[in-house]
Length: 331
Image 1 (cartoon, rainbow, N blue to C red):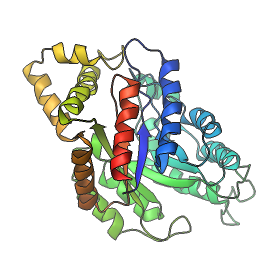
Image 2: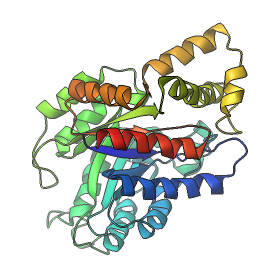
Image 3: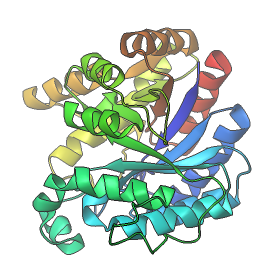
Image 4: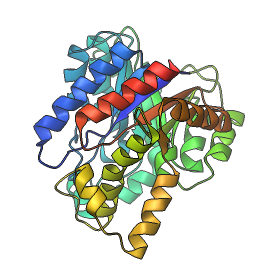
């Protein structure tokens, strides 16, 4: 099984953003040592408990402290930015770290309505225009605008020897269509979608157009997973992240991921308990053998090339241990 890491750089209660970002760098290093194929870090803005607002900065730091693992953004939220600037930034990263850079593109706002207004003007209009902006970005990455195009005489320099690999990240049929139409790789967020994921992935594969970016479909499924030596311990560790997500939905998650003890003593009301069960049903939780079986089953259902694991626990050490157990069992 080909495995990768998706990191949301979560803040744990009692820790600072500096602790969370340092833990993210250490996670990438451990992932490289364990044989994970790639490490992606997400973009969020003024989002309670998530520490990374600028993946491109973290990727420079992580790239300098790793040697071979592919690193990338999961994802750059393109409606907030001009394609030219995004291409410049990731061409710069690809120049510094040849053959290692992925550029994941998403359409989500990544924060509140106020954050969206602070980041960009006419956001909804830019979401509608995303297909055109994405095509423009691809041309900048390949430096191949037609000669009659207004941008044909400029380059998103520096031009690397190997361009960043573009990915579309999403949770809907629209994102799958965008990737298929443009012949790019596609990553589906199973852990954050209530859509028919396998059918969406099937539509991507069946409608894929070969391109200079990619000759055949390439896909990733992003899954929330927690592994421990025993099923009971894994279930216990999962409580922190589940409670934190419920607190976020209530606007109460600013202190970060709670401790296991706090999660065990929490009294859920009926609505919270329903939310808890719905979120848990999308997760992969168990001992190494159980996690491998669940990941293998999902990979078969989706016909995915690769599984990407996102793990949130209160303890950064427990998170590292989970990734290590999964790697030892699956890689």
